[in-house]
Length: 134
Figure (cartoon, rainbow, N blue to C red):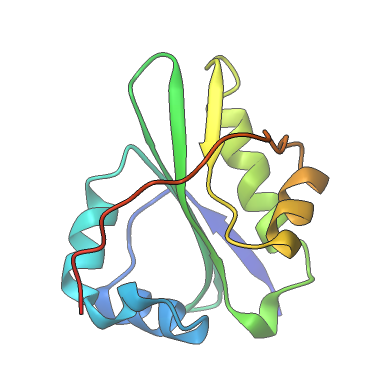
């Protein structure tokens, strides 16, 4: 295994679908929309094992103060090998002059993971959203 990290967007809808299916994310059901969404994000870093998309992180930002990490996704068979950590390091470097880098952690294990990678859990903050899928 040799992981290569890229800032290019040379992934296909199929690459994305396979990656997102590997972690059972609903976005995998919409590969063309997922590709279009990631093509329009300000920042995307990917991790490749030869021609296989092993991981991805993306961020949406306001150009000056705040960046939102939307996806951090690593195939289960590649987890625990530092790929997510490296993807987050690249995001933190990209946005080091911003006041905030924000993300949503969906469970305690992820809160702990992000804390180990330099993020701070802010008590009293809540995620509010509308889901438009069935």
